[in-house]
Image 1 (cartoon, rainbow over the protein chains, first blue to last red):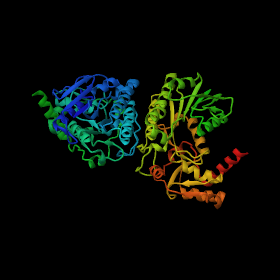
Image 2: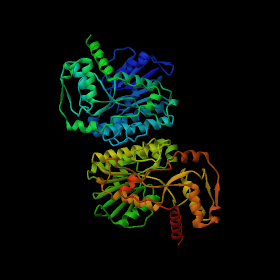
Image 3: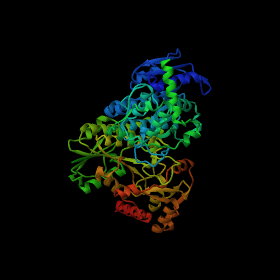
Image 4: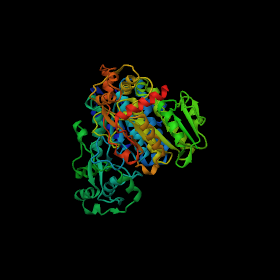
Length: 320
Length: 320
């Protein structure tokens, strides 16, 4: 059977492709083939993965990805928050209209395709009662969050009507992301661990006493695969799940780094507050109630030291 | 200055047109003209109202409604919940795509048009902590509620970005609606008062001990006009307001009717439970926290007896 992954050129999508091939089956059916749908080819070298390079906001591109034996779509492609804020129309097209086109393509196949949609804690605005739950209203303070929240509603309605078998996962901030710093406001959270471990300087742009809501790449990938495997009946009427995370202050992250890699490493962190980044990061909720997700069997990180060690291990494999 | 009202052929839209003309000004500017945009002409006979008869899901029809001096759009047109449930694509077009086209038309005028969007308690699903507030997550169990909730998010984002000056009002069930029973699940709530007052039989299809969340037509119209008049700065970041209502059990409504109109009137009510209507009505939250709306100066009904008397008065004016 066949699975489509949008955004599979990216870090999460590529890892999810590998994870699903490793897992080998979905809902008792063998996974024989994955189609990556993204602006670049999927970097994973595996004969079972083919790549369609194209813009998902073009319904004709979407149509090309489906096969007669498509049983699932994992929709991870999006333009990031700063991009969607700068380019409103493009954000609507990629983050919302393309989701709608994908849902329509599934609906018209009529085979109750599993649809995994990756959303974000950016759907939430500030000033909400803590901890946040699935019953907290999304009041996004960004166009990215708005587009994700609208898509979530649509995935839920398509599921309720039986057009698809949807599941929506809201992702915490992922730490440690591999690669280089980017323009996302959350970029520093990975940077302050990743760059010092690589012997480079990093900047902490916010008050290090502030707590953020994070999850490791390993746990996110396991949880996305779990979300896809979950029987729809196990979920409540609403198919939206806040994936589990851990709340940690930036100082605690740096203490962890020092325990694992020593004070020479943490001495590479400079503290230079950036008002723009602070404004965005402080609007994010630092604490969610994991209870519902845990009751569905999703996993959670326990120790930040383990996350630092896992990234060290990842780096040594990349170098080896 | 000029105001557009979509849905002004309907009961609420027509009354809102009259109310705004009576009020005579908006934000210190005189209201000289109103354009009704609906499938039928606005029934109000007033030289200051003209009607465009057309489908709001056609952007060309929307474009015709705007003038150089348009300062506000009141977007009330929608297809009702049972219709949107039966015709998914039409619901998306009328209840969501048309909202988006209207927002785009306002945005491209660049004059920060006030945009009043009428939403509904149908955005909420069952199982939420009581009382509901603006911080409760919309988890609609209908396509109508989904389309309204998506539109709400869009109105908020357009406002945040300064494309429009939006305000979203979620309406309680309106009792007593004039006219005839319709296919809406809430239709009985007006029927059990209106028909007996007119000497006709009515059916109560749910357990009369169940409470519903209601508002009178007079209060709704005053509140919609207030929402339009409110300075945007008075609202919090989120422009969505649950309009105030009162929670009342059906038995209490009938006791009220009996106090006002006597036992001969209430003897016209038959009790025949209808499982389909019960399922929908029981999914609605019977209690909201009015605090935020009241802090913004919105009004609320105090006594159901007054609502019954107001409808009696309305009937005698119609007959006279």
